[in-house]
Image (cartoon, rainbow, N blue to C red; front, side, top):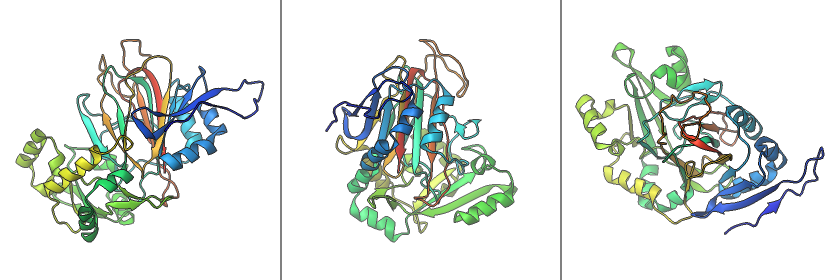
Length: 387
């Protein structure tokens, strides 16, 4: 399924000419994301979005993801301006689980993993009480290789999960996440919660239905139980929305798992998942869940390439956090640069990617925004999801 090119039918204002924008799908995935392509150089993404918000919102509701390609994005500032129009309300990033650097208020680097590592499919912040309803990524400069952000339609993932497995999670109260904040693996507790005040952390955990443990030496552990299946807040469609497989011990790479087994008991792992009643989840169950995320027809997974094209263009990607999962193939820059540093990359240099995510009233929560930056080489992209 594809759409023909369409033109801006609004009357030109301030003497500005009408601008042609294409609307289509990626060849490898005819269902998501919808791709808006600017056919003229220098088209301001924030202004265009403001003029066509109703159209974009309609596509987001119908398809779950939108990719803006070829629009002008000259740097972090233009990404922020777009987000202010498309997302509007921002708040703090709480319960973060991966290393990121705050570049300025509301803007963070991407997960700071080695370039040869990939991040498995996951739903952003599925373990918080008010998960994001919006998530946006911006790639300013693409890497030499890798760096894709695949997105997966989790309504289709839900359809591929064995119904008996779904029933077992529901019968056992969903899933439980246990985290141990020892400061050596994962972000320290003060970074995850945005404060080093134990009283404030306790108050937050009380509000968020999190059980807090304070052990010897003040070491903190948390446990929280969440539903494995959610209903999309607008459509009511069931979606597989959780981190069950992502943080299960069997999903660790073998060398890391072996090292953790030497150091910790299973309940002392930095992260771990169980059934909601505390029963261990068999490794075979997790393998089936991983397969459900990676398998499927061509309409359920899109590899949004942020690495294969060069030149003066921009891509914005936006999608519904309750519809797609996302993962990352980390970029391989020509030269290593400190993430978040501002510089002008040349043809052989590296560049940046940002990431923004928000909750809204559909989940009853305040909005959240974050941004990501990774070493990349020349290309500009932004994409969005919205619930």
